[in-house]
Each structure stands twice: as structure tokens, then as C-alpha cells.
Image (cartoon, rainbow, N blue to C red; front, side, top):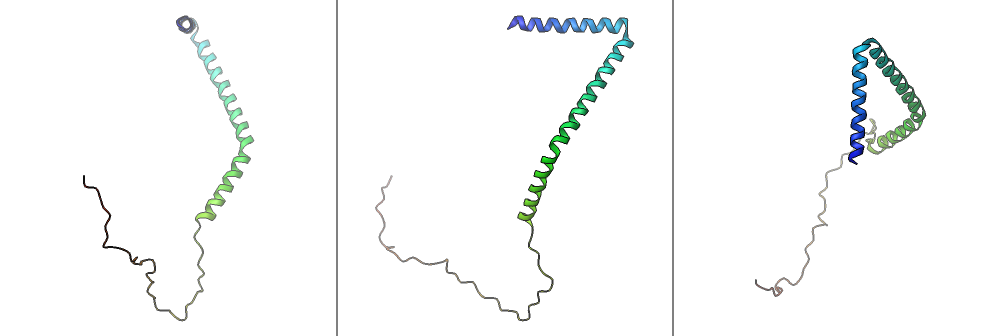
Length: 116
């Protein structure tokens, strides 16, 4: 593993020495080469990005539209009609308290509990 690191470091050092000498003896050629490399990489990136967008855009847009429609239906407030006239107003009723009941039982007898 250490040999691998030394090999990698040696390659990096050789590349830096090569770039340094190239910059020292012919800087215009170096900058032209770097410009062309960046330009070609940018063109390739844009072509791949456009191709992938065109390929997946239909499926992504369709699934997004479906999810948006589902969400709209789920959270949409029911529409109230403007022409609902109540001719007779009903008086408010008291709600029954059926859920509040008293359970009769043996309240006088307590369980034996251990005292700690």
C-alpha cells in the first residue's frame, strides 16, 4: 500500500515538473491547450446534459403533474355555493353529553397494597 502511495506521488510530481517546464518555455501553448481542453469538456458536458434532460423530461414531467393533481385534490377546500339562502334559522341545540357517563361500582372496597 505504501508503494502505491509513492507511485501516485511520483506521477503527480512528474506532472507538475512537466507543466512547470511547459509554462516556462512555451506559456502561450500551455494556455491555448488548457483553453481548448476546458472548451471541449464544456461542450461534452452540455451535450450529455441536454440528451439526458430530453430523455427523462417526459417521465419526470408526467409524474410531477400526476403528483400535483393528487395533492390538489387532497388539499382542496370544498367550494361553497353563493346562493345558499337559509330562510329559517334554527336555534342552536345543546350537544348531549353522552360521552360523559358515570360508572357505578364498588368504591368503598380498596385493594390491599404493599407498603414499601
